[in-house]
Image 1 (cartoon, rainbow, N blue to C red):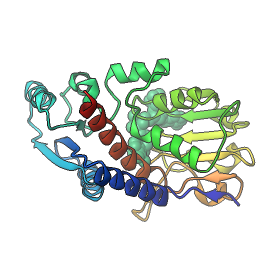
Image 2 (tube, rainbow, N blue to C red):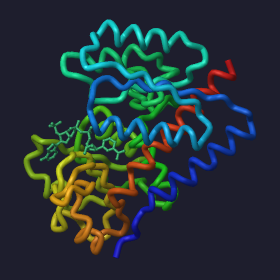
Image 3 (cartoon, protein in one colour):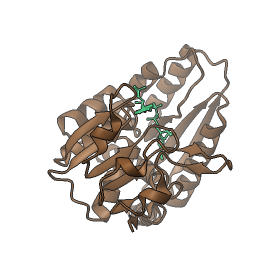
Image 4 (cartoon, rainbow, N blue to C red):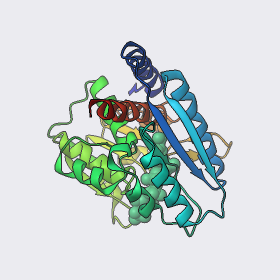
Length: 280
Ligand code: NDP
């Protein structure tokens, strides 16, 4: 039976440590979140981020933009927040309404306020192995490996999914920890073959049960980033948790695994941005 990685508890521990830091060092960090459009899931994510900010002692300011927002209006808000000396971090919640260019918006956020790590400058920093802002989900997963003392060096890691926000930065993070990394995606011919002897599997697809028990090697570490809804309307991941948890050595649940760690890492990145600003 696999060890179930308790992301909820680890995230709580991290938030508590950050809160202590904020109090002890009298920090005044501030996060600005832009929510553009009416995506219901995004509203829930933003609410959770706001709660975490409250808990840690980060000032949280939400900017709600309507569906009809133009690219110019979005960019002009980002420019305003870039100039605001009190704002340490700017987060643009995705997705944004169709017709708007999210990549251009990410590129507009100053690298030093880019707490999501999506600006090409930070993407490049991660690629060349320099310190910058690392996207919160992969960063949270690396923290889980550290906490559970899961050694990555020389391990065969397979990341399923190649998005800019999860799959690609995850692969970079694993590479920087000396894993041998394979990235799979929708055009991968035989996913089973790629996964067969993987020591570490990270699934970031967004399809329920795409990772089945017979695809996984006995003793593998299985990290489930997916957020899907099952037939009962309950949140579930990409992985067949019930069966794979009998075969893996470590596994993350959904909910209570990667999700809370993503938010804890956002808090971590905002405080990091604030401290860098204070040093200047
Ligand atoms: P995207 O939709 O941007 O990317 C999904 C990836 O999965 C793509 O690279 C796609 O390939 C690949 N894919 C689709 N079908 C298959 C398949 N049959 N076999 C192999 N690969 C496939 O999603 P995100 O990266 O943004 O998110 C992935 C999941 O993680 C979602 O469920 C999302 O909700 C969740 N998520 C969870 C977070 C958390 O904190 N827990 C944070 C962020 C996301 P291709 O590139 O070829 O299209």
